[in-house]
Length: 410
Image (cartoon, rainbow, N blue to C red):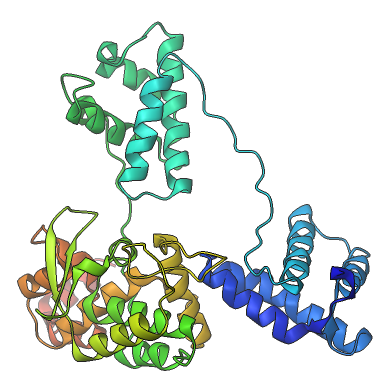
């Protein structure tokens, strides 16, 4: 019986946390929300159950914390965390709570077009959450078009769009979503003219890319336990992101046939740009790749290089899973991420910054990153303060005549 099982609480909860990272949960969710609960639970079990966790210990813990006033969100998080341990007792380390019902899209005569657009966005590599956000906005916009008598896409004119903008809340990205939709509609022949040009853009501040120093990158790599199958996989992923700057979606989509050991190359067709890029298999990447493929990769007929842990079978690691691997390793290394992003993209921008510090020029960095625009590399590069000081100009001496003039005006 599950009720009679008991395992050391700290050991069990640590394994659950590691598996959550492997399953694609964000490092922030794991480290800042779930881990504190398990720390409190471990202390509770030490005090009342000799450090052992069981279903009964979990129930007692929930009853104890229910005496405190908590929000519904925190209450649900506590319950889910305890239930996850209950399933782990029975060997299921990949249990997920049932998802709440998703809010339906606004319905209209455009439902078929909305469904096709949703499938298109997913194919481009957008996350399910991001896709649903876009589709909610587009479905609402098209339902409004139907309400004012516009029943087909070719009938929509610039003046109809601007009428809708009067009540639009652009904090939800309404304008950007509609511009994207009409560019798609024109590209695939749903409308004759691209009316996205009539939609005013909303300038957004582009934050300075997050950058980790070379020492921090080495600390991240050095903190990974490479004696385990999971560690071998994660080390290889992070090494590729740090040394080659490959995007997380392209790491997730990397196939065995893309690894050309005989040629010493990794060939990738970038999902974002569609441009094929060749990367050299550096010696350390070759060694890490061989270690993972020979000793850690689950047996599978899937063509993808990086797979999830078997549960009971493996699947391709998703883009979100790659992000979780990188962010989890950064958190595990004890590096402060309070003011920096902590996914594979941060390692990409870090590589660009390191190359700039080594004296590489923009075209060279653009080639390494696989960028198509000559100016795109500049977005990833944070010029260090010391290099900016080299460009500083001397403060000019203020002429005495002007000083006398301004003093005379007081």
